Image (cartoon, rainbow, N blue to C red; front, side, top):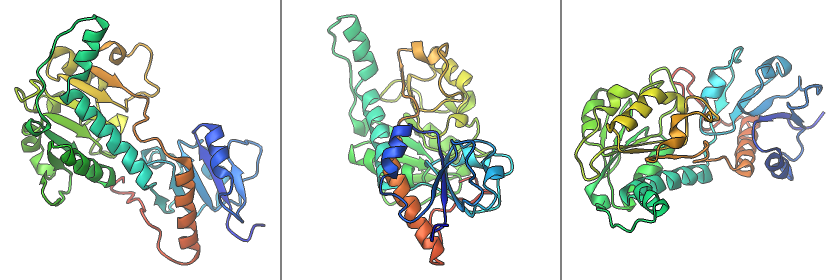
Length: 316
């Protein structure tokens, strides 16, 4: 048996990326692959997972810590037979930077009329469009965790007016924030809405027709815009499509969906005011994931507290 506790990997990522990241990782530990259905993983004490097979807890009954392969943990919390052990979120600078890059890119794209200009390019039409400045636009960020806070900061650097909302309320220097009871006031101020919420019982389906109808109309963009890179279950796709088609929303950038992969017959594919990415806004760097997990394993075995542990009751 290895001198260090063994770890089982069950990540629904590109296998070549996992293999390359494992080179040199977890020195002195037995590394087991749950994808080998015939392999005995019963002695594994740690699991690094992203959308794991549902039988992993039966196959590995001695697990002591679970590590999520991404920032989200709803794929773990919804699993049957989840053991009462710590769950550690993946928090890393690369993950944070990738998300805020995507958010800023989408906000700037809608600010500078990129969807409309792409349509004109396809039609070979030369026509300058009205483009407000960032300072004319208020971006409202829902979800003020690590990812949300970094997006707030970088949107501010680009010159946007930024406001923030979180259920419990947070204080951010130089940024007006709203708590759970002030959602309507927050929405009334917002021209571009950014969703970076975890998926919990409170946030499931929160982005619906009623919410979209409360966003500010007649601002510098004319119609409000919705950007979602949080969790697909937080939006009601039928309501969102309806808001886009009826003109309640002027556009959207979407990285997450109720059903993934996005079905070929989804209306989103054909909507010219919608930008779709395949849940790639903040793809995990597998090397960074393994480095983070290894640091936490070392802390745990030294009797030190784990970092970024999920509050199971809160859901994040």
